[in-house]
Length: 222
Image (cartoon, rainbow, N blue to C red; front, side, top):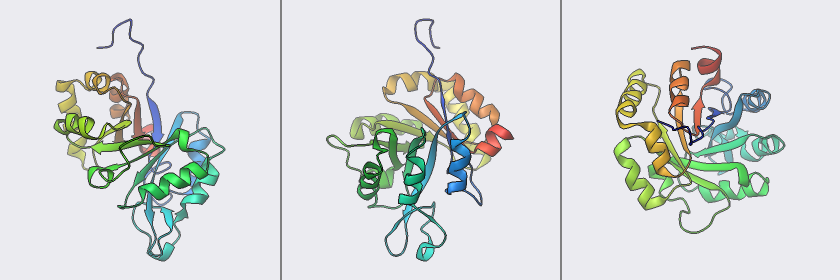
């Protein structure tokens, strides 16, 4: 547990896909809602590419561009805000291009580029880089290897939409101590995707640095 001499981390609330999964996810409308809500510290959004190779804010590769929001348009909107940007790369080979666009938009200093391990392994890990890089770890026994091999700037721990995975996550970390892991890693630890208010409250007690949440479901509802 945190001692009296160790100040507790104030957990950041990060809006999943701009606000919440659904019809308006990864859109300017979602970012607008997040920017107007004082509870929200940052937005998480996905970047893929169109068939023509353009960078788009979309969980899945949009067909012929579709109605997907262009990454440059999203960054132009987000640049004047104070939101931190958590950018998940959904397709191999996009990281360098996305980082270039973050730098050009003037938001690199408050951005984290991250992905699941199969994609994140190809990130520019060695040496200095203009943005922070992160990797998603699904299983606790993978953490030490990831930290040793890649030394990410941010560690992401997560579960998916299946009801049992959240229960399994809480059960494991109640035994292993998520709070102790967060301190031992030495880098910010962000957890998601959070779907219930009680999970958000539990994570806040564990001393993690941030939680990615579906805001409508987790904060406004349950």
